[in-house]
Image 1: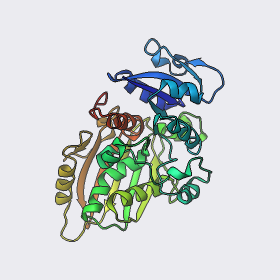
Image 2 (image 1 turned 30 degrees about the vertical axis):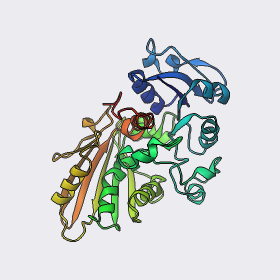
Image 3 (image 1 turned 120 degrees about the horizontal axis):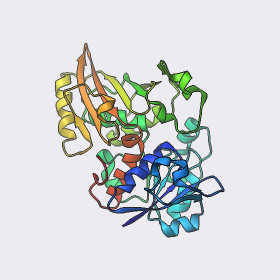
Length: 336
């Protein structure tokens, strides 16, 4: 039985993670913590867990936590996570980190994108990126795993194999993504207040969003080829889900049909990537760990449509998938 603990258990991704772990036959939740100094019942924070999990959220104590946990899920904000990850990994706990603290290649990259200090810079560039579809061997042996960003998951899964195989041009890649409001987290923010975002679609972070460098770096890390990506996210008035429409130029003599066949073959043994002839919809992956992909020819470009649930495949489902791989279990356990 894998003893699991969550550092930062009050947010949306933590709730989704708890719901998955409660149905996991080989895992047990033993510790829940938050940055609040006062203990509180998990059911008081997430009422849907009443009579399902009898456990208090306590303040984080590294000695107590490491003595009672085999696998830690760190759900702290960016730049706040690395100090805790370093502490737990040094005590022999395997850590799956939800923040971006270990996704980028170097301290210079992290500082440039996040404008923050890093408490564990020696690990940067050495921590495996938590997409088992691409980095399974590294994840199996890792003590720290960088759980992917939600937008990057939707873009990297279709793009990385195509770039490495040389089926598309590596320049002028356009990633147009739409996300539900839960991607902004549980902390109230004016832009995500219901009267502000309802009946409205808005682009944000155009040319500056922190997931842009993550997408480009991870594709290059896996494929060995640098890419030029324009990433534009949009907020849409729904709770969960991401739809990314990715526009690429096919390589010479390549067609949308050939690209679609290649992706289907590449992911034939990946249980959570579904290549389909139908245009994907977020409703078809809601609450699941699936990424659905479809390919269409659009003039001299190819459009790839990719959908995921941002709270599952884009966060907590991916984390449990990583835990399963790291602990030698079938990666589908407890996931749907």
